[in-house]
Image 1: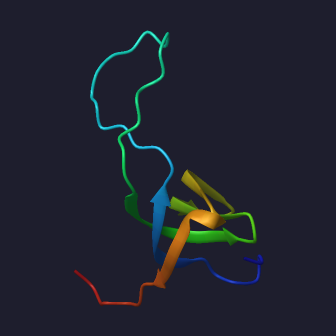
Image 2: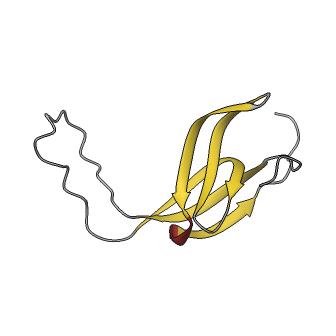
Length: 89
């Protein structure tokens, strides 16, 4: 995305390479065992960067800065859907 374009709110559908749903404390001596199978994920955020290598979504934007960044490898992205305005809540 160039600086001239405003970031757009998007839903990115992507395939996670490793997925662990165990909720526990770990001392770090053994890595968590990934679950078997394909893990199709949906992430929502402002699309701030996209190139041949990765797609970047951010959850929080402010003037010239952002936070809560997700960098998703481009090869794992299955679909990008731009969200449109729906009006006030």
